[in-house]
Length: 92
Image (tube, rainbow, N blue to C red):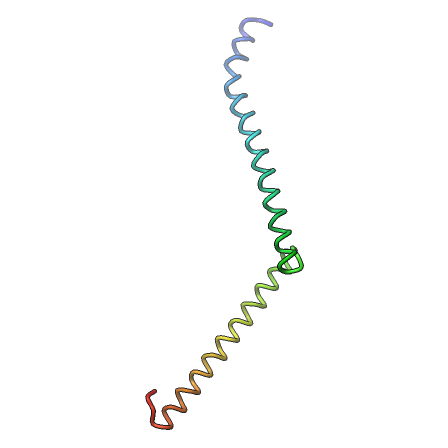
């Protein structure tokens, strides 16, 4: 190889080494995240019987609707109690 080509290769080596190290780190991160995802999917399957995102989203929405209905029912009960107290002359 010509000296000029060798010099150019040596100049490029730090960039190559940096990119190679970044690729190795990225591959490690992908492996770590894939393992975390599998753990999360397993936990979802155990807790909710599925790891399907759409099914889980539907479960969350159903729980929200149920909670909202429970809060509405609680508010109605409180209002009824306040009205009874007001009719009986108690503190409202």
